[in-house]
Image (tube, rainbow, N blue to C red; front, side, top):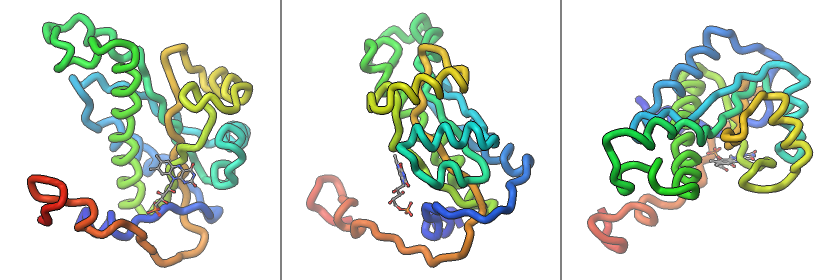
Length: 201
Ligand SMILES: Cc1cc2nc3c(=O)[nH]c(=O)nc-3n(C[C@H](O)[C@H](O)[C@H](O)COP(=O)(O)O)c2cc1C
């Protein structure tokens, strides 16, 4: 069942005028909230954006991508570096087991990594509700260093603190016209191995 959903999901960049209900938006956000994280730190925030003003700003932040401003709603996924504070003082004081003790770079990498799980959950929950999406990674932020002025404005508008980084935007909407899913992926045997790379499963 889940595999069927994964097989038919595709990135959609053209949306109809139909609005997504708040009930469905809540379900999508709830799927993200429930995602797993290392030491259960839940180092993320999700900002639901419905206003055209904020969509336009975020389209600018993502180098003018039209589907960002034309989507019915956006979820701005924020990596929250500040979420590790408690983890710094837990009983787990081995850096190997606790990313909070792995220094600034370790925390940055783990926080950017962690937010991918709720993003995947939200994308699949949307798909299960018949709502299409596209993940937007191309954007100005502290990692890419591009569009610093727009990034500053967006940070202020979204009320981010200095520990919070916009990692990804999820566009959401109903597909304007149905197109067949064309999955262009590497073959199973190119990416899956048994015991060692080179051995087929
Ligand atoms: C981390 C990440 C960043 C992406 N950034 C963008 C983006 O900025 N703009 C866009 O239109 N699609 C973006 N995509 C969507 C990919 O282009 C798309 O998932 C890929 O081509 C496979 O197509 P499919 O999703 O239809 O299977 C991104 C996907 C991922 C996982």
